Length: 520
Image (cartoon, rainbow, N blue to C red; front, side, top):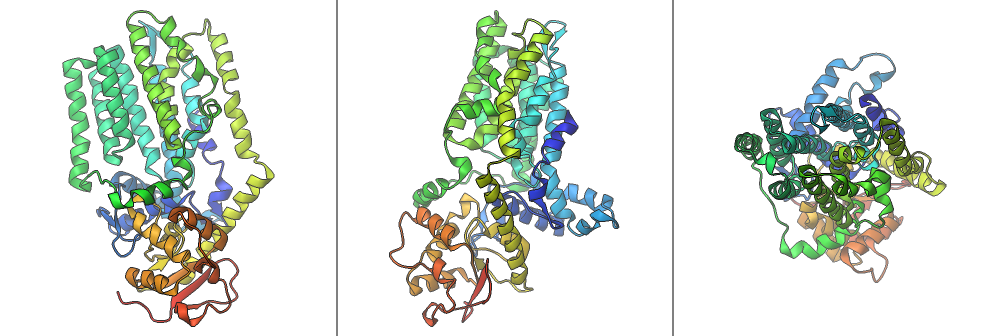
């Protein structure tokens, strides 16, 4: 099952590996890889302020070191093992990209391996273990949100978080049955490690787990176990404070309206549109889970109710933002053992689980065999990434030459060219994102020049004008009253009033440079 999980997470191989080069799934991945490159070039470094976006101020990112060093550590191993000759030798000089591409699938396999170990030890009665334990890692292996979170070419800290949170919640389940020092230590270190990786999702889930454990899992609050658990949390958390200077950065109130408009353009920040998606993520047994409270007895009923409430709370978070979908499925994995105990026999339980997986199989059918329109969009996205990499090659320079481009392409262009960008993909750099939108939507040469000078821009990257205008209009909440700069950049003669000198005979991306480079 572990290797099957890895195989599933490579289903997008043709999108990630194109013409002997590695391409990542989304813009945030390139920001992570820029951090990893800094660490790889300067071992022991800790990336605090990210200067490769929101130039020249940079950003204090919420990202932390564990994922950076996971990528770099894997890169060192790949560098030693990768062949110098043969078909695969073309990637010999791209070991950092390779490590970034495969780190999340490996963590996905580790997640399934832990769930195999944990599920085999689940006791439904004293001395009687769960026979259908294999259903849990199978669901983890094929659930679309969990697969996407640990996908090939997606070096995001979410994959590391899922492994740590699986250990943490697995330990909570064990502590509700019988206090164990080993599970107390494991749960504490996992919660602390998850908080080091990110303060957001782990803090929310930890708060919910603590509140529910006090009300519904009193057995888990044996003093010795919880003392070990608490120490386990503090050790990695204090280490994170010392290494990464962990802090909670609240957005500037002046940027709240801009953040709302920007968030409305991000798919994972949208609310859940239909309950059918939940079935496609977790299977039809999800809707049977409340019955575990009705058919349980005594202490089991109280414990099951706590897990159902945790599942409901995570469902509300998914309804608010789709980005919570992997964590919702993860919580359901720890509810699933109670659901499987409702089966009267092993055979009937296996049949029910198999039938319940139908919505997931239908979702995979759509992913692997998309409609013609979706397939065409994927092809166009892949072509855009390839062409963006070619333009980044033209931007390389031994000197620092900041550039301005649309925000969703800026992290990739920065990673490939080695040049800092005005825009980025993180909410901490919303000021740069908005300046980029204002620049491309500008109809006034004076306003455009002011942004270039203030940001010290040396290169302007012109891309798909229609998409740039549409997205910039959404960000600014206004439509241009005349032809915006994003469209003018494709004219053969822009006009001297804009102060830009551009390339000619370019069809996909076009570079413009200020006639007089701004001072830095």
